[in-house]
Length: 266
Image (tube, rainbow, N blue to C red; front, side, top):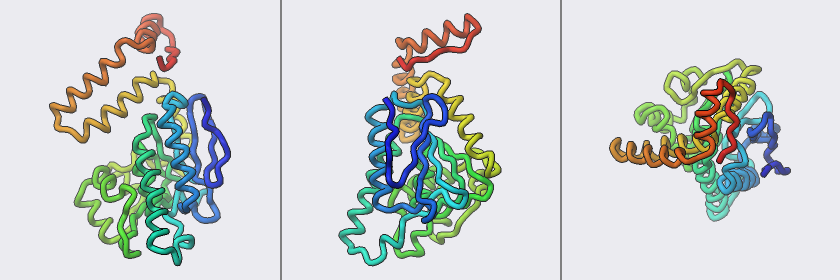
């Protein structure tokens, strides 16, 4: 089943078999998040959560070279009533929960500035590659608010609590090299090499058994919230679900026959 359709604020494409690319597509506004983008992202990731076999890897990036996503669209928010602001934020909250719940491996290609909600969306990805000129920030405190789409939870989990608090409390930006040194970004690329590098990794993931990749993601994400003994028990439960699959038998057969496996997700 394909999930390709037209969205007002997103561009969806299939750059390779089994791979979906979701591009934040408001380049004239630095891909800032307005209500419609929240609704569009919610629709995409709710749909993927309901149909996890649709793709084997997802790439999230931004249109243009300037910004991944500059955060919330403050021009839209100017003059909003408290009720309208909270109603909009509820859309963003639901969007983030849908992204975090997505069972398919989600790779971020941070092609420029990832500020505020843009940084929070990047932190929802399983891992990130970033262009060398990319910068990150959670500057909500300078606007009289705080991160409310996972920033105060996902940043500490990525870079450690003490470093996260410094940037959350000051709003100071940090660059791609710092993010890599702290463990938030896996690889820093030259701008022209970013998407090819992410696509190459996505293709490697997509060539593997999709039931296994989804179980690995589920096991890591759930186990990190547990004590080690409980997490090891959870891992075995996840492992045992793969033993009776066709893909497990195909993987062993392909190894012994010295050929590339043809995984079906069954």
